[in-house]
Length: 80
Image (cartoon, rainbow, N blue to C red; front, side, top):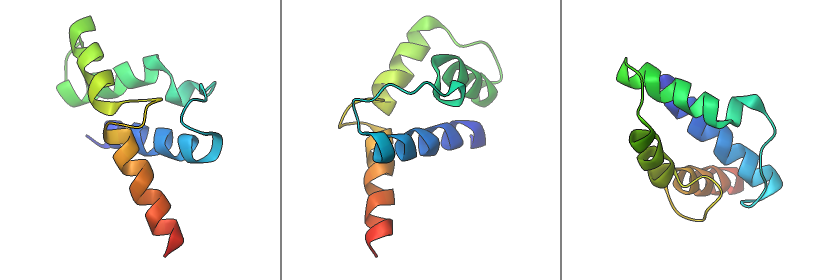
């Protein structure tokens, strides 16, 4: 869970700095990094269907999803 949580937080921080539509060049925010985090969580290889579902839930590059929730929480925290 730690690897996936770290990926989500790092992606949210990237979006805060560069905007939601920016495409990260950092390998730590790549699809390969996401697959690795998911495989650590599942303790097995991840199927393409599972990866697609995870991307949908996380919502990288969109205003919806778990990354958006973390981004909003981080922005709110920074204002306080």
